[in-house]
Image (cartoon, rainbow, N blue to C red):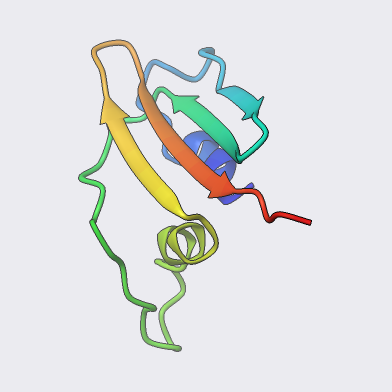
Length: 91
């Protein structure tokens, strides 16, 4: 949800009519989510830290990295894709 919110909040000027694409791929060992946006893009930090408690922004990337096993951000000419991976637990 946080990735989708960012894709909507930070859409690039002139791209308001472009769709945010969300894909989910479920395998036996892993779930992969992809959120493709039309923002100006960002430099994806290798690791984020929790911002100061008085800060009104900056928790989204921290929360994403805290709950996922792997994250990567791929910038492209027509959109950017955040790829989130989470291993399934074995029963």
